[in-house]
Length: 83
Picture 1 (cartoon, rainbow, N blue to C red):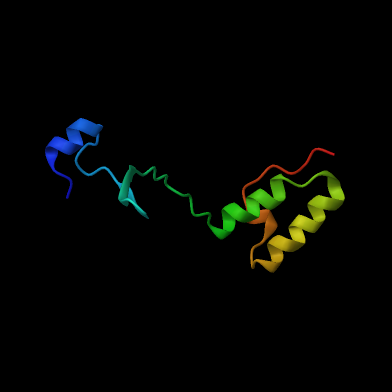
Picture 2 (spheres, helix red, strand yellow; picture 1 turned 120 degrees about the vertical axis):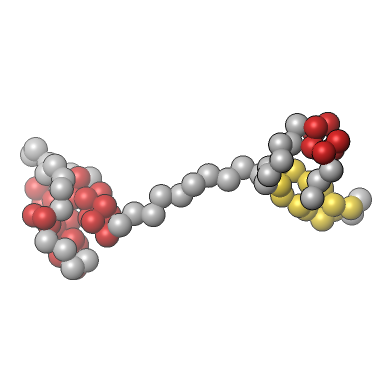
């Protein structure tokens, strides 16, 4: 726990995540930045494959990959390529 006086001095709010690094001089404390990650469902990954296909041939290849994932490409909400 970081004492309140040090938190105030360095602009660290209570609960701020920090990184601790060992250096030759001792420990270095730095504020950490954490970002949420998005976990994609199988259906979302399938939609990425289908929507990012370029041309008809690539789209058919993407449909095959989606089938390998155990999904029906027609049941995955997506926009097929126009060309």
